[in-house]
Amino acid sequence: MTLLKSDEFFASIASTIAIENRAPQYEFPEHCHDFYEIVVVEHGSGVHIFNDSPYTLCSGTVCFLRDSDYHQFENMEQIHLTNVLYRSPKSFRCLSDIEPFLPCNVQTGKRQCHWQINQSALKKAKSCISELEEKSKSTKLEDIATNEGIFLQLLMLLRQSCFETHKNDSHEACVSALLNWLRNNYSEEIIWEELADRFSLALRTMHRQIKQHTGMTPQRYLNRLRLLAARHRLFQSDDSITDIAYGCGFSDSNNFSVQFRREFSLSPLQLRNSAR
Ligand code: RM4
Ligand code: NI
Image 1 (tube, helix red, strand yellow):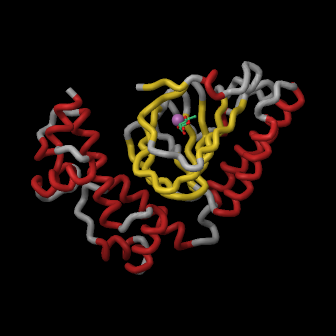
Image 2 (cartoon, protein in one colour):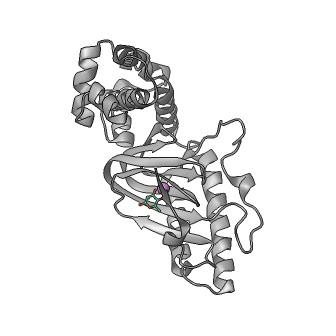
């Protein structure tokens, strides 16, 4: 796996923060970093595979990565995002430690690294980011201090908005909950009418909102989740292709193979053999 090194991205040894705009972000293969990263998605859609789990990106998605995480971007459609890089929670000049403000519980392995913020918070975040960008190449201590101050502001803003996102928008809250549920339960038999009901959405609203959030129809999105999970299991396990197909929610293994080939241009068997 490729390791991205801080020397490539930070302006100098003195810099503690670096801004990398990706407008657009193209597909990007699996990699890790020797730095930490906050990814803020402005608009577009795509799939973020984070430590092997797929997450759909959309406007307002924020992701926190540590130096031990790895990730990749797939199926990017007009995605604009910004990476805010920092060396580590304790490697600032003027801030002592930002660890308490990062998504927590590394020990239990249960940390929610993807956050969703609303449009007004996104606007504020963007303005912090452009301020950061202005001085990010400077080696003057004053500029570094100013930037670290802005970075802390950005971090607080993201945290706060993550908890507030859904306060005023019940549709958004329901759709978020539904998408979250799907990410964990894609292998179950899904009846869209029932699911819409369960998350208090009209069927048409659900359809429209999923399309808006993921850029895909609900069925296509569900299929992608299943196919990505299947691909992961093909790489990581010795389970038979039929078991994997059923285990990921396909009711027929021929149909699974057809869809798989359409999505990844390889049959499940070819993919498994290529991994060996
Ligand atoms: C890449 C991609 C990676 C990020 C580097 C800095 O284009 O966004 O995720 O680590 O830039
Ligand atoms: Ni990265």
